[in-house]
Length: 75
Image 1 (tube, rainbow, N blue to C red):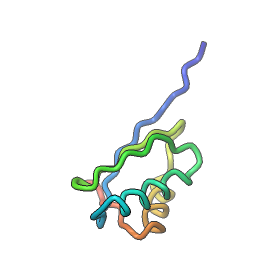
Image 2: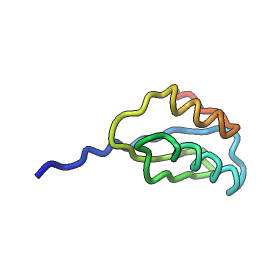
Image 3: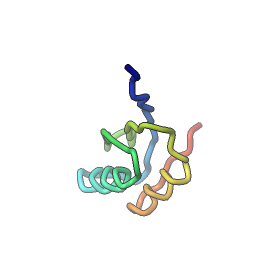
Image 4: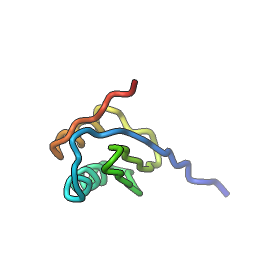
């Protein structure tokens, strides 16, 4: 029996201040095909989610920006 390969993703989002912000980011990411289990930590800006396959960073960035926030670049 084959296991479904699940990719865990971690990004950081700038500009979230409240639960409403977190919900907007979460809802926007969930619209991307294959994204599941979105978890948003408002204080740190950390957003984790899983997907069945890797998702292009530009797709993620576009989803975050369409929600009104910015994807924080990795250091």
